[in-house]
Length: 191
Image 1 (cartoon, rainbow, N blue to C red):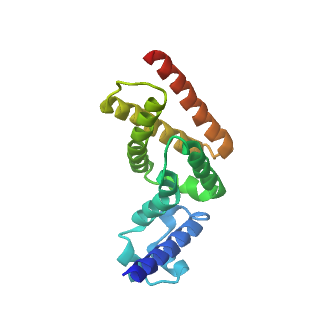
Image 2: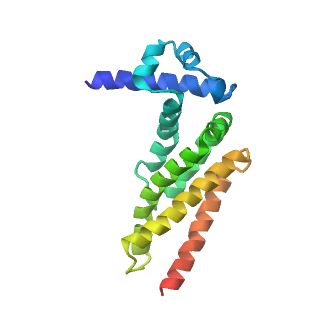
């Protein structure tokens, strides 16, 4: 069973790599499943065994390349390093990510924001405990997490749409400065 899943993962990665390569020189709407299969050196039926369509492959690729590494073990102490790694990954494949984020960006933004909100809820709670802010209920933590989840997603999408001109370090520092300012205000208000 493990071998089958390892083989399936290799096949998915092969197709994702082909899609990524094709999107560096073609718009997504011009790329066909046949193009992906040909570049991957697989049969079209193999593609459909793993993915319903190109959109599902793209979602899988973005989730595995950007979201999974960002969210894996994410906490307040490593958050900025992980965001920096995400910005660097996107900048290294600038053409691909710029094109990928244009496709159905509303659904993608909603999805990323939801996942980010889930992760930030725990980070917000942890931040409150570390700074002695007691008495904040879980629902309030969720609202704060939604604010930051949607906010960071918006910043990332906007940065990509502007052409990723700022360096990953500058973008990470800006988010860190925003969190620092919010933390200072929250601690002052709580006292």
